[in-house]
Image (cartoon, rainbow, N blue to C red; front, side, top):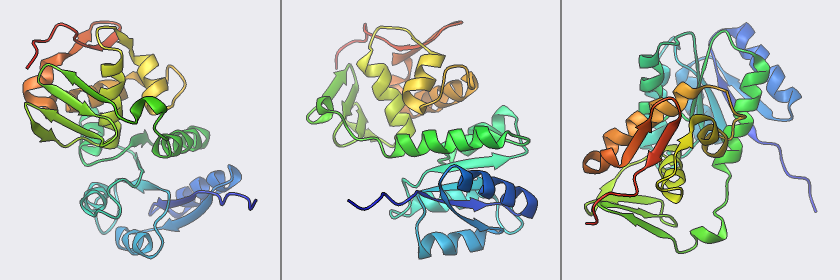
Length: 238
């Protein structure tokens, strides 16, 4: 049986030294790596040979990384392409914007190359995850909320809700543990694939976005102060 080809990572970074550092560490971890110093070069490379994941700098000379991410999400061929944003901006508003445009993760400069490699691995494992047997014909209905697992569709009052793959996985994790409080560390481990204690604000940011998208069902997701989140088990049936 032929050996499995290593995953291909595209690093989009205009600082040559940093691009080389990231690429070297990823190659040491066994990945194939291509670098691009500009957004236009990156988009052309993605069209030529779609990578398995993109490490994307937010501040590029010809186009913001957020715009690159938006373009990838608008194209059916790349809408599920994993993207990790790398940036010097670390304020919560910057992380929120990154996740709003579809980034799968967000790493703030200066960062440990080992941390980035670990995050790349976690995002790739999440993207490659296969449905378990329980997903074959599973539809979860909770009040106004309906989660069609095999179709990866969520509806509120019958209206389709557009969720990212990560938002869907977060909602499904909470729904399968309906009524039980889920600590942030447990969500990070199951949904993001990280070891506990990495960064709890990542969970908070995604829950905020998930609530906004759920609209009339937003209050189904409860915050348990100092612990985490749960999906209510006492919501009225539709």
